[in-house]
Structures are given as structure tokens and as C-alpha cells.
Length: 214
Image (cartoon, rainbow, N blue to C red; front, side):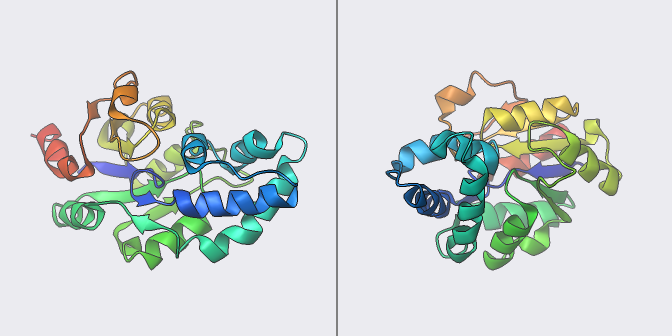
């Protein structure tokens, strides 16, 4: 059975308000104006360090990361919501026998906290994120470890995401990738990204996965 590895922000959750809040908190400490929500949305996806480098500059990014993490736990749950269809899709995939995991550039402890608070954490066999030994996506280390732990190979693994970094992540490990325009990229932008499928919404995923195993 196919192993399905989901991205988090923009794929399963809308957590942009929480990210923008914590980013504004960090920027305020540096005397900087907070960024418009649309700009923050476009900047998300490449890891916290890259986000803070863009927002406060490379030299002060480490302190920016510390400040972001100081604020984020207080807003992560109340300012995050599941995207439409997510509970139904996860329940359907579980019922059909698919094994699922999450691979995000958000630290795993935050991802797990949010998923559990949203009531969907139990669907995932593992939740992966960057740490001292694990680089951010698109480096495939995170994905290789998930597949090894699951006993899955690249041919039997599908990555589901909302932006080009998810495609690069999947392809770097030799996996298939499905994209949905539910996050920081439009459908038109995603048309230019290498993918096995570009769905209109996550609700189409169970049937697409079933069609691939026939």
C-alpha cells in the first residue's frame, strides 16, 4: 500500500496567521514594521531560518529565530485551523489502508502540537521536521528516514504538498508528488512545477491514489 507523506502548512493547515503573529513579534523587537499577510504567506515554506533571514537580515536571523520561537507556542494553536476537507480525507485514507506521515520544515514538536490540537494527530505514523541532524526540505534526508522507518521505497511513496519545495523534496528522493493550490501558490503557478498530479483540492486525493494502484 502507498505511503503518503504530507506537507503541513498550506497542505493540511492554514497556519499563516500564527506565523505572521510570531514573525511580527520578532520584527518589532528589532524596530521593524510587520509585513503584510500576503507577503508572509509567500515567504513561508523553506524553514524558519530562511524566513527570518528574509525578514530581519542574515546577521540578526539567529536572534530572530529565538524571538519567533518565544512567541509561536502561544499563538500556534489558537491561530491555526485545518484546511477544508482535511478531516474527511484523512479518515478516508485511513479507512482505505494508507499509511500516512507529515514532513514539514516546521520543528516536529510544533507540528505534532498543532495536529493533536486539531484532532488529527492520530492519523500519522510519524511527524518529521528539521533538527541538528536533519536539514530542511528540499534536502531529502527527512523523507529517506520516514521511508526507512516505514519500510517503504520511493516507488511506493507519494509526497503531497502545495509548493515547489515539496516537488523538489519528493524528486530528490525519487518519489511521486501531488500538488494542491491550497497554500502559498496558485494553480497557475503550480502548473509550472514538476508533479505527477495537480489536484483542484485535497478532496480528490483518495480517488487519485486509488487510481494509481489499479
